[in-house]
Amino acid sequence: MVAAMPDDVLMFADTARSPELRHEIPTGIVDPFLYAERDGRRYAVLSQLDADGARAAAPGLEVLTPEELGQDELLGSGLSRHEVQLEVALIACRRLEIARAAVPPGFPLDVADYLRGAGIEVEVDRQAFVERRLVKNAAELAGIRRAQRAAEAGMRAAVELLRAAEPADGVVLLDGQPLTSERLKVDIEAAFAAHGAAVDEVLASHGPQTAVGHHMGSGPIAPGEPIVIDLWPADRATGCFSDMTRSFVVGDPGPELREWYALSREALERAVAATRPGVTGFELFKLVCDLFEEHGHPTQLSKKPGEVLRDGFFHGLGHGVGLEVHEEPSLGRTGSDPLRAGEVVALEPGLYRHGYGGCRIEDLVLVTEDGAEVLTDFPYELEVSSSYSTH
Image (cartoon, rainbow, N blue to C red):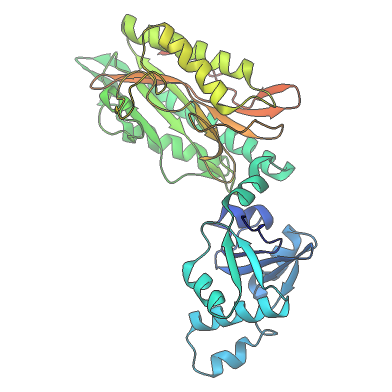
């Protein structure tokens, strides 16, 4: 018989890198600290540098200072800074009478070993921490919406460059120079910054690169080839992400790419229309796979076991978005859990051929009580010309 997971909770991290901890204390704290839940009360071991900000961000949070837990005496005994951190965490657990606690998957192994060595049980409960963050709170939704407006600003900046460019002698020229992925990224990132958002990477790929999944893109763009721009900036104030993708062509895309794009748009429309509480991610994924397979394109559901799919629809339909750009729920083969109102998901159907390229369209969607709200506000036109409107 499997033992029940403990009610008490421990985390040891900083809020900049731990989405689980940022969800509980929604403010930026760059140094790792101990967070605990015991008998319905929440505690954090924080220095004066971060204590006031944490209290303001998380009403009801009780702060334990390192000094009251014996930090000064421990430092005076010759222990290293890290050894003092471990001992202070142990003293805090003992003061709170925590003997057994659930921890997230990223809980540091050295901290776990130290606590276990002193008789405190820590047990990873991934699903419990996933459940905490599935339905977004008001502050997270506001942050996601702001991040999405930043993503749209970045996409508009890219489109303005593509509109101003001209096909000439096998390249796309902007002000007499070849337009490159790198040039697109400069203006995209500037637009993010102007909207209070930031990102570590920008995907602006073209040609065969667009069929290589997460190829970030590089080099000069050619006329008539697919251009895929996938943007996932994070709102600086909340740490919440957005995620959106559009595909473009400067020049004539040709009949094959036009067909793929039309099918991808239809797939997205069908997925959005079917999104509602109670439907599973797999059901949405299968709906899109069925459409693509009807038109002769392979998918993850039609391929043979063990086959590596490089053409057609070779990835899942999407994923949850929040304090991580890729989080639960899954909208693929493992998406067995019913969606709930308040979850935010990215839907991103696409079609590809290795060695040539492909297209993808991605919208951000909020699951509502009676259906879905599309959070993305950006047109879907494939061909970029001087008449292309981003509004």
